[in-house]
Image 1 (cartoon, rainbow, N blue to C red):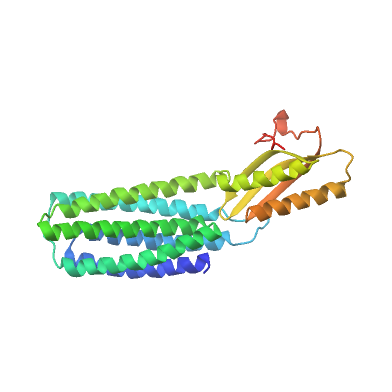
Image 2 (cartoon, rainbow, N blue to C red):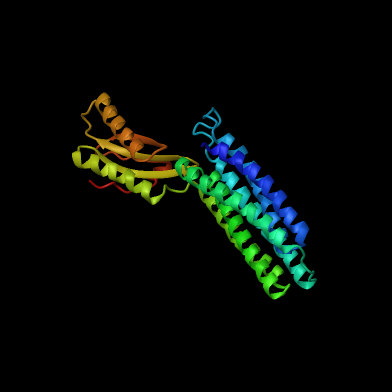
Length: 304
């Protein structure tokens, strides 16, 4: 199943869980169930925005965006993180108000049943979304999946707290549980915002992908006569980029050098799915210089 399809399912699931959790809150007047329903509203807004950004990210490169639109997914992750933080603050405020003004809870059994049903829907969907996100390297889908998992754990905590209220009669456990929910989703929101910022700032490739690139270059360098250096990597959504220099003997023809470069690019693409490799050809002993005589970034030689 494709990324956009899962996000459409996420929108539908958010609508269903909003109805279930709002019904649970209306029946019980529980502030912790209200906090759970508010988080589902955030799920809906996040899923709609993620679907929009995934659609933008899938557009081909154009004159204004020659490297594509892949970073649009990071806006989705950051936006969802901000929404989660806002929801956490709202939940905390409601919990404090209820703590200061306790109210009796009603029809807890039916309300908890509706909450559990919504959690089952979210859990099954989040599991499938996370698997697809890893296959397609989609941070937007992964962010939405992790948010749904947070929602599942939130609901589990709410149910446990309300069961404790039913067993003990201690009404203060309800706002206490809501405060715990707020802290949990605040942590998740901060994590999503941080990951989004890293992506927008051209973060280097993941260690496992970097190791795969270096292994390809090491193998080629051992065969000779090529030497590689100035390896720099970055990632944008599902795409990975690598820039490097390949030094070859000065007496090689351009056709021969281009043929070896093509072989290396194919090997790199095979090692790291979605990689776009850009290899600059240079004669042995010649180094590329940036403006003002500054050397190219990432200037460590890839050893033989």
